[in-house]
Amino acid sequence: MKRAELVFIPTPGMGHLASTLAFAKHLLDRDDRFSITVLVMNPAFAPTNHSLVQFIAASDTRVRFIHLPQVDPPPKELFFKSVEKFITEYVENYRSHVKEAIINHVLSASLPLAGLVVDLFCSSMIDVAHELGVPSYVFFTANAAFFGFMLYLPTRHDQVGIEFRETDPESVIPSYVNPVPPGALSSFALNKEGGYICNVNHGRKYKEADGIIINTFSELESHAASSFFNDGTPPVYTVGPMIDLKGKAPSGDNQAKHEIMKWLDDQPPSSVVFLCFGSRGSFGEPQLKETALGLERSGHRFLWSARLPSRDDGLAKPTDAENLEEILPPGFLERTRGIGMICGWAPQVEVLAHKAIGGFVSHCGWNSILESLWHGVPIATWPLYAEQQTNAFQMVRDLGLAVELKINYRLGSGVLVMAEEIENAVKCLMEADSEVRKRVKEMSEKSRQAVIEGGSSYASLGRLIEAMIANVTVPARK
Image (cartoon, rainbow, N blue to C red; front, top):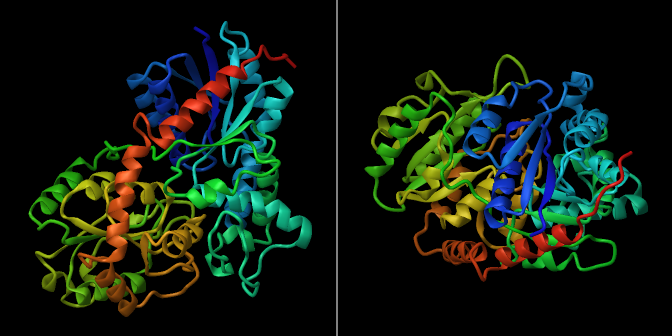
């Protein structure tokens, strides 16, 4: 039996590391011919990832971790001008350490190297694979339509040569069914401080990889998946949905989790709307007031993860909203006692799986969308940052799998989403026999079928594994 080593190179940060490890374990569960080494970069500002790494290392000895030396981050000011440009430059600073670690710790071992698996911000590591004479695969943690947008960027740039503008006409992007308005594009597309051009370069670099691995399934994104069959695009492998169905509570939050789940146990089936906006999602006090009014007027039960921006540092995570009596409308907490619960952190996966949940007001991060579809819970869209605007656009306009609350909202824009908009979206979302709810239930079943034997993603993962094994070579040491 032919055995081989894979080296995974995730972008620094908990989210990217967790997604990479989920795929690594998914691959090993399917085929034990692989050994996997993960090269760990330290986050530029946040605490190290060591606790998560230690947890995984203890629970799964099949994955080996190599912690790379710390490198100097770019100037902090760049982070506030363009997060994407900052991360890209920071990752590029690790190139020599990555190559050195592979030569010293991987190529010196007995197993041949089947390739490097790099995530979406690590496209510069494709050059390291070229230098070492081994294949490279991009693990793309967003969806297939957005990967199509990344491929579209270099083509458009070669024709136009500048960033997108708010006044631009709608863009015809092959991976989307409908033309995409500028308000539904990711913020980086409009960024003149390096965010736009660094993503143009990523899109160009992806075409040099030997394969693209995407956490999606062809039944969900059939249009996007079929748009890649043209010259110059590497093979695309749709291997999702990969979902951490267990979920992991941050240390110290088990009590909060217990209280939330106990409260949900007391609610009728499909009666609760869940509002949660991801690890970086937060709103100022005026928006929290409007949200409270909208929820109360909707008349529906609610579980609301309410978080405020950190006062200390723009890089710090949001804080749980305290002193709610002072922030929310007078009497709100008293009037909604029994029908509503406000929390800080929430165990999203477990909440979405609970029978009491009937709808999800979400920031439209791709993992959140996949989790919601898996559990058959329809979404009302409220995107904040990254590619969430295009995710919201796709879910509402292209796929008909979500209710539109907002598509073009951007965190930090100063725009207030009014109570009336929230009320109307929640009422629409919670309709028992809506067309969106029926479509989501159907897609839930398809998502579960995709990953079992005979399913589309199961077959796609099999093709990826065979390609990886077939491409194994004894690399040149440079």
